[in-house]
Image (cartoon, rainbow, N blue to C red):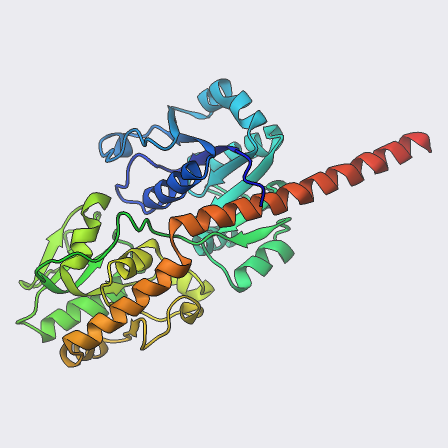
Length: 377
């Protein structure tokens, strides 16, 4: 496409802090690559205490970052920025997200987009009349819906919810940050993820129970917000919070890493997590739960291992040779390098913008002709 510079505004959950959320790493990689391709990006983030106390990238060098304290300040300070941008993106879980979306879709003269990093959760919330950050009436007002989830969900967004254009913009990774490096293995199996009630049962089944069967092996669980009631065996190390700068070393220090998927995302399918791509980029062999569409990203048995029980996990840890495990990790790394870097997502976003812009311009021309015809009649 024409590589003209775009002025892009992103109103997202957070780019400055990765504490308790996976949004920051996704935004950082995407914005960095958009900037490398010559675009100008402004990132507007609600200033909240829990991120203010944990800013691990307060001022990204590849965008202008602005913090605002409430909806009124957003409108007062940034209306012109939103109005004249070529592309305005509102992310999922943005505080006052419905009001922000109404403001953006009513103000932006360029293309407006909703970027859903939590699509299955969003749709489940809408179905239960929970409109925390997106209302179904708002979906048709956005010029496009960018989704972390692909497959049948995209058709549903267009046909059931009236999105003019629904496209997949999956998570990604930065190959400058995630790659294999020589490390002594500290753990046989590790898991990185914030606590969630729906992920805890599979974590207990696939890792904690396996640790009970392998007393001589070492395990690790990293991530915040786990309840005090969770029992950790002596061979399971706990890390409360692991900033992105330490993720590469974390993955490279494991013989295998575990991927667990949110329940809503399993039901929707086609919902890879950013941790999945980051681990693969490090060449660490992945043991994962199964969901429809997984084969669209990795070939089970060849590029990723599937576990449905503690016994499956134990078998993978005990029976695969070092060479076999390394080969699986290398195949997964080659796959994500070919299809799932942040640079791939930046190019895809340019393509989607061009598609949405053309569609919007065509719609405006048709509306103008109908208006002229009505006046003449």
